[in-house]
Length: 327
Image (tube, rainbow, N blue to C red; front, side):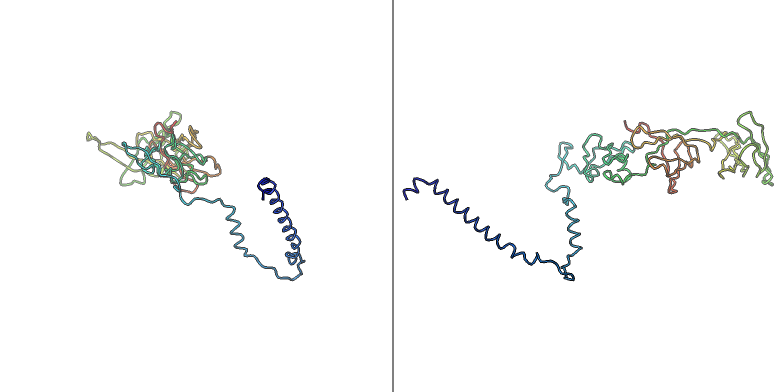
């Protein structure tokens, strides 16, 4: 007992040695029986032996789940609600609006940004393009598409605006008519050239205006009384474009805009300042990035333009608002 008190470190060393020797012996015993335990598995498989079939559907489903990252079910899990201060009072960020649509001047709700995990309080959040599809957040909000999905974006023609209506005067003017209401089919109309290079022509219904692709299709007598009680002749002659089967109406003594008028569009894609596109009325044109799809300018006026989309839909293209696009 006195030896133990005097040599505790030697006692501890002896105990550790005995434990190590015991563990080694146990490992030797287990190793000697290893082959006996797995003898059945080591035997060769005899042809025709039925093998246990795995549940293929369960295996495939489990493998698929391992490939998918785990996602939280909600946006606010372990995250406190965000607040802003309005009128010296805290208010949830989901309410109100920090951003305005620079085109319509309408407020873009904060909730719309938060629904797509975007920060509505960030400077210029309405003009950001998080999915890099060429459309700004305000464009996606306006058209109801997803700002974080490149495959979900507004139609390309929504980035088209009329920058200028280029009027081309029609080179023919309706000057007068020899008209008998009792025999309207025998009317003769006087067509004058706007320039002095051609002579005046007198044409009946159905006759071609010489040197042009236009034919006299219809005459309609119209007399109006102005604010001073004076009668004014505003009769009309309808000419048929034999090439495109379109019509143009000439009013007596008035120079009419030609069907060959142009629209100068501003196409703001993928981002400002955009590019100009000059398109003739009834002409086909394309919009990047899909240059295989064709649009057609149907009509143009001071109020805007009407185009036909590749799907055949007729849509109105507005005039470019002052100060748009935003710098």
